[in-house]
Length: 372
Ligand code: 1CP
Image (cartoon, rainbow, N blue to C red):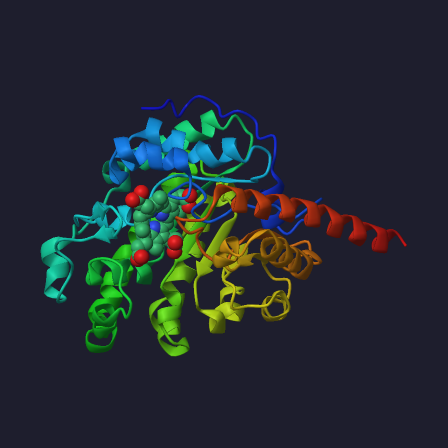
């Protein structure tokens, strides 16, 4: 257990928080989705010793792994993201989730029909009872970071979590989860509402434990067409930002929404109470800026596979990205989705250092233009 009453060390580097709030920054901040994880040899070494969820549940180990990329890429990452998984919410709701090496998450007893909701899921979830280890890991990590960079918390979005709970793991078609929304829309909304309530409590708890920014991952957003996204994803994403901010009041932190593949919803997403909208590589900087009209900070969006393309390709794509997004000042550099497990650590380094270099160049050019 960590001592949550001990004051946190002062934050020495708030670049990402300023960018999220829409302030002009001296360069674009950068972090990478899944930056702590399988592409890092030091993480793989940890996994030989420990099961995935054991790392999540042991604050000392979660802290250690969260800091791995911050130490390796010292000075190049502008945020840390707590080591955990979106699937701790289904666990808190009462479901069993295992992490199968080389395969990913597996639910031995997925939801099959709506009647399973009452049988398998707890009616009321107390996140402080079910997920104290995440809060402890956040508090411990926030201390261990010593203010080097802000610490991000995260939750999975309701539709994405519902999809895992019904599919029982990753899926190419999401046929089972989609059968639910088309065959049992009322019960699907009931399930989404239950998940949303836990998301809200969990996100609020993470901030109270020390998270300085939050990201909501709707990783399966793009599996829904515009009509179904508007029915089964958007209202819940909207509720999460609204309720989390209302509950936290003056302690609210910037929030990011990432609905992968939902390019058609970018304008709508930019009108919710999120400060930042993370976009994948199906947007050009120009189209993303046109859809969001400066209402939010944009985050993203290089195709993670560029990191396999060799130095020239990485420098070209990262440069194009920062130059394309950089001129508004409302920008956080990232990949368009998580970094892949077989990416060489040097490719990540080149991506980060290019973003820094080009970000400084763009900022200097902007300043020169403004003072001209
Ligand atoms: O560095 C970080 O980003 C922090 C840790 C983190 C985060 C933010 C992990 C560790 N998982 C996540 C979020 C997460 N988990 C998402 C949303 C982001 C995204 O879209 O990539 C999703 C969809 C999951 C579900 C999940 N967990 C998958 C995907 C399965 C599929 O559907 O194909 C996998 C493979 C996991 C396991 C996992 N989570 C994290 C790691 C490092 C791993 C690998 C597990 C291992 O070590 O074996």
